[in-house]
Image 1 (spheres, rainbow, N blue to C red):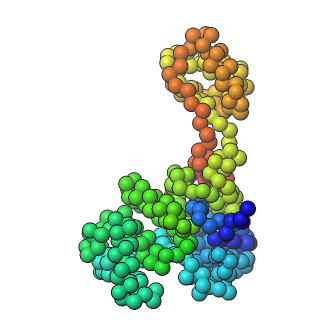
Image 2 (cartoon, one colour):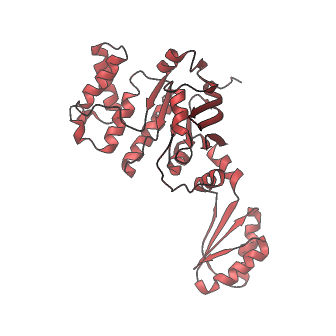
Image 3 (cartoon, rainbow, N blue to C red):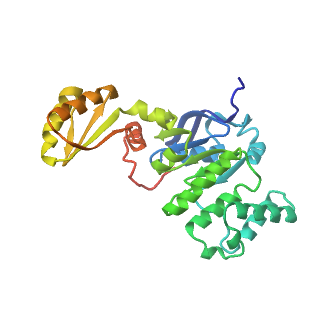
Length: 320
């Protein structure tokens, strides 16, 4: 069996800003051809990690390699292997989309002819052909983000860093970016992205790295992280609200767990789904009719809260 190629290898990476240790001995690997999402509360160190891997910041300790090349010793080679889309757009507001991409291509040593050709290809790929000569002031947020992403792909990099690529976008624009990311990986790229949207990580990522206070506190596939953190939940909706309390007592007796009642909905944890048939039979025997039954996996929100102790909906100013 052929070993998987590692796109990213990080070992004991450290970065300090004065007395603040922003990244504290972070280690992880990312296999080629996958989407890895890095989650963490604001100020956890996600952007700092990305900036070090992209050779924009020098680590204070530890090492990292991109396709086997050291980010310090082989920085020039590393820069040729990566594309970076940061939190803030790098496109020039005074230029058209076509002009922006052409200039980026020329900055990457493409001839003017080749740069224009590449710009046309990227505009078509990102659904921006009709807006190629439009002023950027007339672009929507989603269009700007797609153009920014296109600019990072001029050199066809095998590894792409996306720092919160959909922040501030409406749901439709977010879905368009998601489709683009999936297409990039289908075409052979590897993606490391940071995000504050847990549903985004759940939808896209093959692997999730959770960082808190500069340290890795979780690193696995989405499903395995969920299984590690919590039990399955049983959700039952009774047809008649006045039977909810009696139903809860029966469930508690069989499963040995506390049942929460919210109007006609009963919720509890369940370790063994095989016992579900006992619950249903017992409820049927006392004529408690059911409207709905669901066994639910732990959510990524619950994983995030369990690993970091932070409310995933909390938004604070990020301090890197």
